[in-house]
Length: 375
Image (cartoon, rainbow, N blue to C red; front, side, top):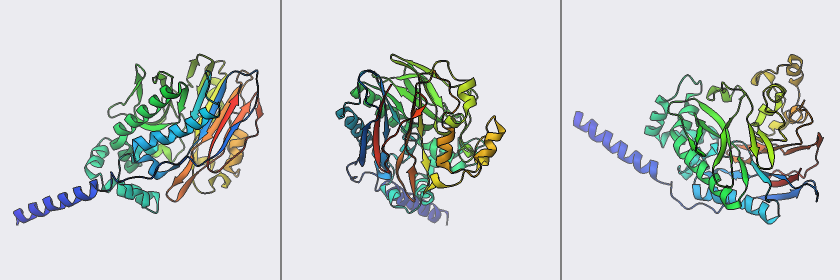
């Protein structure tokens, strides 16, 4: 009886291995940019610096192959370069979570054919049972254990692809890149390279890459994740905004909804940030037209502001609260969102550009776009 059970177990594992590794190396379609807007927002011969905001339109299949992933992002940079947007004093901004979806790197392509995000990640777990178990035992007290375990089991590969992609692109185009964001355990930088902390908490982190391909300074962590994300993410202990002295500007980066909280950049921000860049991501169908529930987010220091948020549409919150209460030392604020198709959901949002306290008019698109703003 025992021999039969062992034989059956070996056979089951053998069949699972065949199924698990099949469909990972099948040909994928060539990446498409879906680029419909390429705009220089404020023409000026006297302004010598610029920020290029890139709004990619990503499909699930764009994340399976690291080579195709890099090629797709390279195409956006190439388009910006062809339009004359990438110059000596340029900073390029990609949106939030552009690296997090690398959790799909080298996975079974059938995952893209699932009807729902939930089913897709069930397939991802089942096709990586042993790695998922190793990720599971590394989780801490997170409420969303499956999300934590998935991100942990893929973190080394995600970090490797993310770093090599943006490092190579920054060198190729000889520009500074704010590389959106990626969720990783205990990320840190040493000698301009990205490393992970063993057994550390998960953080949503962004990085600035220089023309030499190295990361400048320390990771930029999301300070106030919303309550859904806090089921697997951690708030950093240090809630100060980092300043970056680029050769042509003093810059700061905030991730997503951190830009709604004036206490962050009026009390903890480095002085005289000329430029604030905000990579963002909003997943959902028509979520920008949905009413905001303030209990899903950290309350503002101003309690009246928290109460006034209730009932507002999300797009109005972005319009009213985005980097409000800044002093005049900040010349430019740029926000870009990640667009695309993520199973039953789509990425939403439109770029926001504020130059000297005036909101600049931009062409908007539900597909991909590139906007260059001079300052």
